[in-house]
Image (cartoon, rainbow, N blue to C red; front, side, top):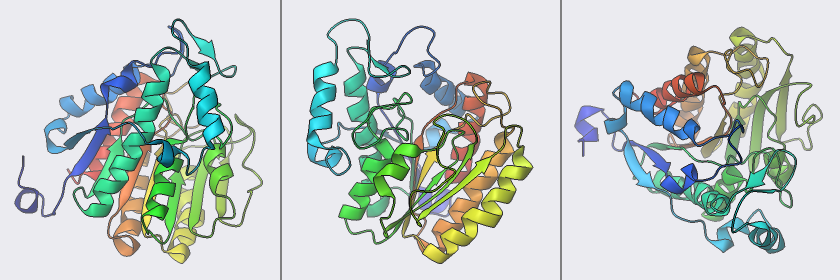
Length: 317
């Protein structure tokens, strides 16, 4: 293990939390949310010489009481009943489960709880959760948009239950995090800042559900310049006023110029830039505490490069 205090001038490394179970979830050969997404990120981190500088942590299975912080037990039980022994079962038009999907979803939620614990205890300076299925579309009672459990939401609720006074969520996925908004709107201990293409799936977010939701819709074709302006003008003042004690990031990389699932024009430097801004907020108000959670990103090359740029800033490499 590297001596982080002397090598990097910091007391703890960046945790990289994942599990092999997350690669077993498969919604079909042509589905864009595929196991190769995690391979693309890992391969890029290795190629960039970053892999050995991270603290590698296996994600545990979430506990039922942790899921119950945001998902009623009857919803979790309904997914249990739907989980197939063979083949693929659709939960909605875009979201399906194979025999390994539900276990992967429990790992994904457990990863965020574990990452939060590592960061809150100081064992890790911050963390990135390389997990799937993603989570920010999952509402309290409903799976949708490739998502079964709201992984980030489970982690946020866990941090609040552990005594973190105020938590901020920053979501730069190209799709609005409707599930996260549904979970925490009007919660005075949570602030959410979000950018997303609009009009676009899930066709909401333009009218925030509560005063603690700072949603910034972006028109198709918006470049990194427009995204940075939204962060500078809308996100940062709201975050400064809120003074979060911990930040969770819904790190979707599907707003990339090369990702044909959407029509925004971000590049790797934009993801590095917004990560630096969020780290500055965390350094000022949250003792540096950040947990980042993988959401979208479907062009494998762009995903790998963008996630690596994000993690490089988190890890101060």
